[in-house]
Image (cartoon, rainbow, N blue to C red):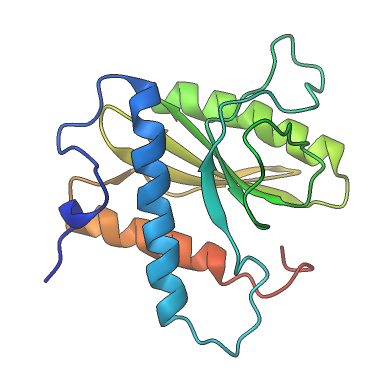
Length: 184
């Protein structure tokens, strides 16, 4: 049986430098997406079937009332990868998932709340914003859906346990299972 440490380059003791976690976390999430796509029924419609995670850490086009430029660490994009130099807009339908990497869940949720506010205010048709909070030191993940009346969140999911790893996979499969643009 393959265990959770077979995942791409996630060190068992976490990362000491935040930025060093971006590429391994991106590879880890893309490996889950790739494996899930092989298992999901091919005839069922899936709006996010082309989802790919990419390290971003660049300023978004809009700051939307923020004093500082907004720079999500990783983005889940629906279309083919964009050039690293291309600025991405919160209004772009391509942005499906926003991922922030920090140490401490309180800081993560606070930063992701700012991103979600921008995501939802720039595109008024959007009814929710999907986010992932990743603590690079403890290897804990939290899936968060921000909606116009608040947020819904998973528990902290530890990649140190098989149950946590399986739950992360289930959440990613759930995201991939969104059937159409209207449901998204």
